[in-house]
Image 1: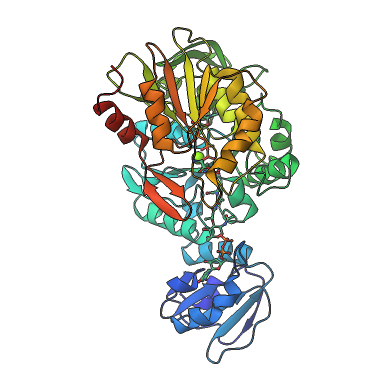
Image 2 (image 1 turned 30 degrees about the vertical axis):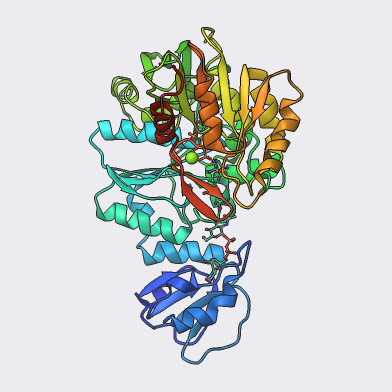
Length: 483
Ligand SMILES: CC(=O)N[C@H]1[C@@H](OP(=O)(O)OP(=O)(O)OC[C@H]2O[C@@H](n3ccc(=O)[nH]c3=O)[C@H](O)[C@@H]2O)O[C@H](CO)[C@@H](O)[C@@H]1O[C@H](C)C(=O)N[C@@H](C)C(=O)N[C@H](CCC(=O)O)C(=O)O
Ligand SMILES: Nc1ncnc2c1ncn2[C@@H]1O[C@H](COP(=O)(O)OP(=O)(O)OP(=O)(O)O)[C@@H](O)[C@H]1O
Ligand SMILES: N[C@H](CCC[C@H](N)C(=O)O)C(=O)O
Ligand SMILES: [Mg+2]
């Protein structure tokens, strides 16, 4: 593709030949090849502009920069105002604007994005559609799995993924839209048909200044959606999302009056049942993932399906089968107690997950968790306090400590749990902590391993070590410990 065509719609100043043929585009100098266009992005750790020469050495023949650089003979320099915004436009051009050929559904919110996208995929597939999915656990094209690095990929990777989806006959794409992706312009140039808001609670305050800014960032998605905004009316930030919406607003909820409502909710350890009501239509829904939060996630998916004209009967059948790896996932133990793996990693996530167990009185609720290093610190004591309020016993341990000192993270969680009278132990090594939980479990206890969900690794320092909690539970129990 000619450089000039790739730059269509990009406000820029071109120095050098605009008619050269471009073989590929990259934003990492190490990935540059012959005839590539290199986009220099200012990052959080370093600055792409420092690697222009390396990109050229590796074969780049054109560079996009957002600050003046020296001229390189035979290299076309494209000066733009904002390299991230330019990258999104370039990516869309280079891959032939794939989102114009797809029905794109974006889901944003602090919790529930992955769960809602899985529910939507199941609903759309039941209608015999080929569905693409973009998110935290993995990306998918039908049953084909494409590993994911981010919840929402960089614009260049995202547009490439969309173009592959178009080529493989995908019609609908359900994707998680993280606040990082909205702030860092990864989803600029995506033509969203429908935007979904799950909820907003504290997380990522390492990245966003405060809740207001975090909410404002999320609200950008609703400015972008062309056909519908699907909003959880019970969330206190819903009005902000509604005000930002350009398209038709459809609400869902339980407490306040909404277009789509859940009634008669019956929760148990095996799942949750409820009646959904949309104007004069009613249907009984049964979910395999328990908790009120699952009802909210299902309502979000049901509202989208209703907008797309899918019958409630078909939705009911699809939803009755949905499970999501690491979201209230039961682990078979063969023992007289229960073990669940859950991805709750925010104060709200922990609260909702523990609320899901509220009616369970047969045994103790034992919660094992930590908090990720190099991420929001403010949430740690809040997680401790909420955990202490709901659990009968807590085991404080490591999540992904990354470059932080695990003990330090745990002591920040302890600040919160100490405000409650919940008994707890600290066992820094997560495998040993799981061992402790399993070996001390009593009949009917429910053990929740929280925070790592689908993850099959642990990040300690800059090492990524294999860590699959399903395997670890099996291994410990097979050693013949607990009874
Ligand atoms: C805060 C953040 O999002 N950072 C992302 C950002 O990294 P950065 O800004 O630090 O990049 P950098 O290392 O400074 O490098 C700047 C530029 O120089 C380039 N470079 C660098 C070295 C070199 O030799 N040559 C070269 O060209 C890099 O490719 C980059 O383009 O750009 C990188 C390249 O695209 C991303 O991998 C990186 O994500 C990091 C790993 C990350 O952890 N992101 C998380 C916080 C994130 O995005 N999370 C959200 C939400 C998660 C959720 O709650 O679900 C997500 O959507 O995943
Ligand atoms: N609607 C919800 N409200 C509150 N908590 C929820 C909701 N849905 C799920 N959770 C809790 O949050 C955890 C993460 O859910 P999920 O993976 O669907 O969220 P997410 O928004 O994709 O998270 P991430 O931003 O990390 O990708 C679940 O394991 C559950 O404990
Ligand atoms: N995707 C989210 C959650 C990670 C959960 C937890 N396991 C951690 O590592 O902090 C994030 O990047 O903040
Ligand atoms: Mg997710």
